[in-house]
Image (cartoon, rainbow, N blue to C red; front, side, top):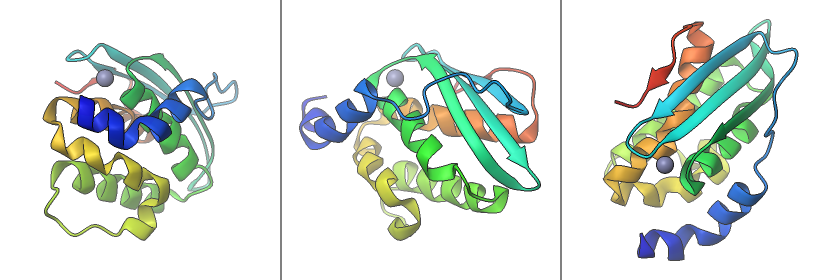
Amino acid sequence: MSNLNELYQEILLEHNNKPRNFRKLEDANRQADGYNPLCGDRITLYLKVEEDVITDVAFQGVGCAISRASASMLTQSVKGQTLDKAEEIFDGFHTMITEPEAEVDYDALGDLEMLSGVSAFPTRIKCAILAWHTLHAALAGQGDAVTTE
Ligand code: ZN
């Protein structure tokens, strides 16, 4: 963990200490739970989708700094986006952390690029991807909790 801490300590801790959109969204019309048993991360993601735009998004949960920071960044990056665009961001993020050699459009990812170092730590990838799988489940309207296993 030492390298990861050194490289990403600042941004991760900042998001971990002050997660963005960390609340229950009372008027959410999509919702899903995610669980990463490897680390114990749990997240509930709330979305408000109108037409095909994510007009609001929030999350609650307990987990490690990476899972919380990733969820916090997710809410910032998909809020106000169309569903298609959110899917594009998901694909780019997934590629970035699971295929370090692949070409990624970092412009489209914005701050999420700061989580790219997670790709060097296979056990932490699931922490970083948890919120995104949960987003998928919420948008697909799946009632069951998603798990990274
Ligand atoms: Zn974790």
